Amino acid sequence: MTGTILNVATVLVGGSVGLLFGAKLPERTRQTILAGLGLFTAGIGLQMFLQSKNAMIVLGGVLLGGLLGEWWKIEESLQAFGAWLEKRFAPQSLGAQSRSDFIRGFMTASLLFCIGPMTILGSIQDGLSGNYQLLAIKSVLDGFAALAFASTLGIGVLFSTIVILVYQGGISLLAAQLSAVITEAMMGEMTATGGVLIVGLALSSLLEIKPIRVGNFLPALLVTPFIVAILAALGLSN
Image (cartoon, rainbow, N blue to C red; front, side, top):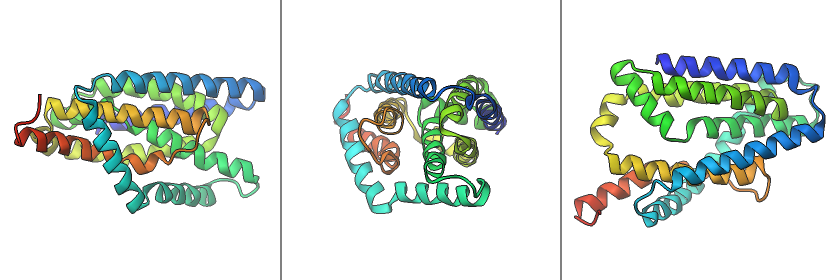
Protein backbone atom coordinates (compact mmCIF):
# COMPACT_ATOMS: atom_id res chain seq x y z
CA MET A 1 0.00 0.00 0.00
CA THR A 2 3.05 2.30 0.30
CA GLY A 3 3.02 3.13 -3.42
CA THR A 4 -0.70 3.89 -3.38
CA ILE A 5 -0.34 6.25 -0.42
CA LEU A 6 2.54 7.99 -2.21
CA ASN A 7 0.37 8.29 -5.34
CA VAL A 8 -2.47 9.84 -3.38
CA ALA A 9 -0.05 12.32 -1.79
CA THR A 10 1.46 13.47 -5.11
CA VAL A 11 -1.97 13.96 -6.68
CA LEU A 12 -3.08 16.03 -3.68
CA VAL A 13 0.08 18.15 -3.78
CA GLY A 14 0.06 18.59 -7.55
CA GLY A 15 -3.66 19.33 -7.61
CA SER A 16 -3.35 21.85 -4.79
CA VAL A 17 -0.58 23.71 -6.60
CA GLY A 18 -2.72 23.75 -9.73
CA LEU A 19 -5.65 25.19 -7.78
CA LEU A 20 -3.50 27.91 -6.22
CA PHE A 21 -1.85 29.14 -9.39
CA GLY A 22 -4.13 27.91 -12.17
CA ALA A 23 -6.66 30.68 -11.67
CA LYS A 24 -3.97 33.23 -12.53
CA LEU A 25 -3.67 31.83 -16.05
CA PRO A 26 -5.78 33.39 -18.82
CA GLU A 27 -8.68 31.25 -20.04
CA ARG A 28 -7.10 30.91 -23.47
CA THR A 29 -3.88 29.59 -21.90
CA ARG A 30 -5.79 27.09 -19.79
CA GLN A 31 -7.63 25.83 -22.86
CA THR A 32 -4.32 25.38 -24.65
CA ILE A 33 -2.90 23.44 -21.69
CA LEU A 34 -5.98 21.19 -21.62
CA ALA A 35 -5.69 20.58 -25.37
CA GLY A 36 -2.00 19.74 -24.95
CA LEU A 37 -2.87 17.25 -22.22
CA GLY A 38 -5.51 15.76 -24.51
CA LEU A 39 -3.05 15.27 -27.35
CA PHE A 40 -0.44 13.78 -25.03
CA THR A 41 -3.01 11.46 -23.43
CA ALA A 42 -4.17 10.27 -26.84
CA GLY A 43 -0.54 9.56 -27.79
CA ILE A 44 -0.01 7.51 -24.64
CA GLY A 45 -3.19 5.56 -25.37
CA LEU A 46 -2.08 4.78 -28.92
CA GLN A 47 1.32 3.64 -27.64
CA MET A 48 -0.39 1.27 -25.22
CA PHE A 49 -2.71 -0.10 -27.91
CA LEU A 50 0.25 -0.97 -30.15
CA GLN A 51 1.35 -3.52 -27.52
CA SER A 52 -1.52 -5.76 -28.62
CA LYS A 53 -0.61 -9.02 -30.37
CA ASN A 54 -4.18 -9.51 -31.58
CA ALA A 55 -6.32 -6.41 -32.12
CA MET A 56 -9.47 -8.54 -32.48
CA ILE A 57 -9.15 -9.57 -28.84
CA VAL A 58 -9.07 -5.91 -27.86
CA LEU A 59 -12.08 -5.20 -30.06
CA GLY A 60 -14.04 -8.03 -28.50
CA GLY A 61 -13.12 -6.91 -25.01
CA VAL A 62 -14.08 -3.30 -25.68
CA LEU A 63 -17.45 -4.21 -27.24
CA LEU A 64 -18.42 -6.78 -24.60
CA GLY A 65 -17.12 -4.57 -21.82
CA GLY A 66 -19.08 -1.62 -23.20
CA LEU A 67 -22.27 -3.68 -23.20
CA LEU A 68 -21.69 -4.70 -19.59
CA GLY A 69 -20.91 -1.11 -18.62
CA GLU A 70 -24.11 0.15 -20.22
CA TRP A 71 -26.05 -2.57 -18.43
CA TRP A 72 -24.45 -1.78 -15.08
CA LYS A 73 -24.63 2.00 -15.74
CA ILE A 74 -21.08 2.56 -14.51
CA GLU A 75 -20.75 6.02 -16.07
CA GLU A 76 -23.97 7.16 -14.40
CA SER A 77 -22.77 5.80 -11.06
CA LEU A 78 -19.46 7.65 -11.36
CA GLN A 79 -21.26 10.86 -12.27
CA ALA A 80 -23.64 10.42 -9.35
CA PHE A 81 -20.71 9.86 -7.00
CA GLY A 82 -18.99 12.96 -8.39
CA ALA A 83 -22.20 14.97 -7.94
CA TRP A 84 -22.51 13.75 -4.35
CA LEU A 85 -18.91 14.79 -3.64
CA GLU A 86 -19.57 18.17 -5.24
CA LYS A 87 -22.64 18.75 -3.06
CA ARG A 88 -20.89 17.50 0.04
CA PHE A 89 -17.56 19.28 -0.24
CA ALA A 90 -17.65 21.98 -2.93
CA PRO A 91 -18.71 25.54 -2.06
CA GLN A 92 -22.44 26.07 -2.51
CA SER A 93 -21.73 29.32 -4.33
CA LEU A 94 -20.38 27.52 -7.40
CA GLY A 95 -22.22 28.25 -10.63
CA ALA A 96 -23.61 25.62 -12.98
CA GLN A 97 -20.45 25.61 -15.15
CA SER A 98 -18.20 25.20 -12.11
CA ARG A 99 -20.30 22.31 -10.84
CA SER A 100 -20.04 20.66 -14.24
CA ASP A 101 -16.26 21.15 -14.19
CA PHE A 102 -16.09 19.57 -10.72
CA ILE A 103 -17.68 16.35 -11.95
CA ARG A 104 -15.70 16.43 -15.20
CA GLY A 105 -12.44 16.93 -13.32
CA PHE A 106 -13.23 14.12 -10.89
CA MET A 107 -14.16 11.63 -13.61
CA THR A 108 -11.34 12.54 -15.99
CA ALA A 109 -8.65 12.32 -13.32
CA SER A 110 -10.09 9.15 -11.76
CA LEU A 111 -10.17 7.29 -15.06
CA LEU A 112 -6.80 8.53 -16.30
CA PHE A 113 -4.98 7.79 -13.03
CA CYS A 114 -6.45 4.29 -12.72
CA ILE A 115 -6.23 2.98 -16.31
CA GLY A 116 -2.96 1.61 -17.53
CA PRO A 117 -0.31 -1.02 -17.00
CA MET A 118 1.62 0.97 -14.40
CA THR A 119 -1.41 0.93 -12.12
CA ILE A 120 -1.87 -2.84 -12.27
CA LEU A 121 1.77 -3.93 -12.45
CA GLY A 122 2.87 -1.40 -9.85
CA SER A 123 0.09 -2.36 -7.44
CA ILE A 124 0.90 -6.06 -7.82
CA GLN A 125 4.60 -5.45 -7.18
CA ASP A 126 3.82 -3.29 -4.17
CA GLY A 127 1.45 -5.87 -2.73
CA LEU A 128 3.67 -8.90 -3.33
CA SER A 129 7.13 -7.67 -2.44
CA GLY A 130 6.75 -4.15 -1.10
CA ASN A 131 8.58 -2.82 -4.18
CA TYR A 132 6.78 0.41 -5.00
CA GLN A 133 9.30 1.77 -7.51
CA LEU A 134 6.88 1.56 -10.46
CA LEU A 135 4.12 3.26 -8.48
CA ALA A 136 6.62 5.93 -7.40
CA ILE A 137 7.28 6.75 -11.06
CA LYS A 138 3.53 6.78 -11.74
CA SER A 139 3.05 9.04 -8.72
CA VAL A 140 5.39 11.67 -10.14
CA LEU A 141 3.61 11.59 -13.51
CA ASP A 142 0.18 11.75 -11.86
CA GLY A 143 1.30 14.65 -9.67
CA PHE A 144 2.23 16.79 -12.68
CA ALA A 145 -0.94 15.74 -14.49
CA ALA A 146 -3.03 16.66 -11.43
CA LEU A 147 -1.36 20.09 -11.40
CA ALA A 148 -2.35 20.70 -15.00
CA PHE A 149 -5.85 19.25 -14.63
CA ALA A 150 -6.65 21.14 -11.43
CA SER A 151 -5.55 24.42 -13.01
CA THR A 152 -8.22 23.97 -15.68
CA LEU A 153 -10.89 21.66 -14.22
CA GLY A 154 -10.78 22.67 -10.56
CA ILE A 155 -11.02 20.94 -7.20
CA GLY A 156 -12.81 17.85 -8.51
CA VAL A 157 -9.41 16.50 -9.59
CA LEU A 158 -8.29 16.19 -5.96
CA PHE A 159 -11.20 13.89 -5.13
CA SER A 160 -9.92 11.35 -7.66
CA THR A 161 -7.61 10.28 -4.81
CA ILE A 162 -10.57 8.39 -3.34
CA VAL A 163 -10.76 6.21 -6.45
CA ILE A 164 -6.96 5.79 -6.52
CA LEU A 165 -6.93 4.67 -2.90
CA VAL A 166 -9.74 2.13 -3.33
CA TYR A 167 -8.71 0.81 -6.77
CA GLN A 168 -4.91 0.63 -6.43
CA GLY A 169 -5.09 -0.34 -2.80
CA GLY A 170 -7.55 -3.12 -3.61
CA ILE A 171 -5.27 -4.52 -6.31
CA SER A 172 -2.30 -4.48 -3.92
CA LEU A 173 -4.29 -6.37 -1.30
CA LEU A 174 -5.31 -8.97 -3.89
CA ALA A 175 -1.87 -9.08 -5.50
CA ALA A 176 -1.07 -12.68 -4.61
CA GLN A 177 -4.26 -13.96 -6.23
CA LEU A 178 -3.91 -11.75 -9.30
CA SER A 179 -0.29 -12.68 -9.95
CA ALA A 180 -1.23 -16.35 -10.00
CA VAL A 181 -3.95 -15.78 -12.59
CA ILE A 182 -2.78 -12.99 -14.93
CA THR A 183 -0.35 -14.13 -17.61
CA GLU A 184 1.95 -12.01 -19.75
CA ALA A 185 -0.43 -12.39 -22.71
CA MET A 186 -3.39 -11.25 -20.59
CA MET A 187 -1.44 -8.24 -19.34
CA GLY A 188 -0.45 -7.27 -22.89
CA GLU A 189 -4.01 -7.28 -24.23
CA MET A 190 -5.34 -5.62 -21.09
CA THR A 191 -2.74 -2.87 -21.55
CA ALA A 192 -3.83 -2.42 -25.19
CA THR A 193 -7.46 -2.24 -24.10
CA GLY A 194 -6.58 0.38 -21.49
CA GLY A 195 -4.92 2.34 -24.30
CA VAL A 196 -8.17 2.39 -26.28
CA LEU A 197 -10.01 3.68 -23.21
CA ILE A 198 -7.39 6.39 -22.67
CA VAL A 199 -7.77 7.54 -26.29
CA GLY A 200 -11.52 7.72 -25.70
CA LEU A 201 -10.92 9.77 -22.57
CA ALA A 202 -8.73 12.19 -24.52
CA LEU A 203 -11.27 12.60 -27.32
CA SER A 204 -14.20 13.02 -24.95
CA SER A 205 -13.15 14.82 -21.77
CA LEU A 206 -9.97 16.64 -22.78
CA LEU A 207 -10.27 17.50 -26.47
CA GLU A 208 -14.09 17.50 -26.32
CA ILE A 209 -14.36 16.17 -29.88
CA LYS A 210 -17.16 13.72 -29.19
CA PRO A 211 -18.98 12.72 -25.99
CA ILE A 212 -18.02 9.16 -25.04
CA ARG A 213 -19.18 7.31 -21.92
CA VAL A 214 -15.68 5.99 -21.23
CA GLY A 215 -16.63 4.81 -17.75
CA ASN A 216 -18.98 2.26 -19.25
CA PHE A 217 -16.03 0.62 -21.03
CA LEU A 218 -14.17 -0.14 -17.79
CA PRO A 219 -15.40 -3.80 -17.71
CA ALA A 220 -13.34 -4.30 -20.87
CA LEU A 221 -10.26 -4.40 -18.64
CA LEU A 222 -11.67 -7.58 -17.09
CA VAL A 223 -13.29 -9.04 -20.21
CA THR A 224 -10.14 -8.86 -22.37
CA PRO A 225 -7.91 -11.11 -20.22
CA PHE A 226 -10.87 -13.49 -19.88
CA ILE A 227 -11.03 -13.74 -23.68
CA VAL A 228 -7.29 -14.43 -23.76
CA ALA A 229 -7.74 -17.22 -21.19
CA ILE A 230 -10.57 -18.81 -23.20
CA LEU A 231 -8.56 -18.74 -26.42
CA ALA A 232 -5.56 -20.25 -24.64
CA ALA A 233 -7.72 -23.03 -23.21
CA LEU A 234 -9.06 -23.78 -26.69
CA GLY A 235 -5.55 -23.75 -28.12
CA LEU A 236 -6.34 -20.79 -30.37
CA SER A 237 -3.85 -18.32 -28.97
CA ASN A 238 -0.72 -17.30 -30.89
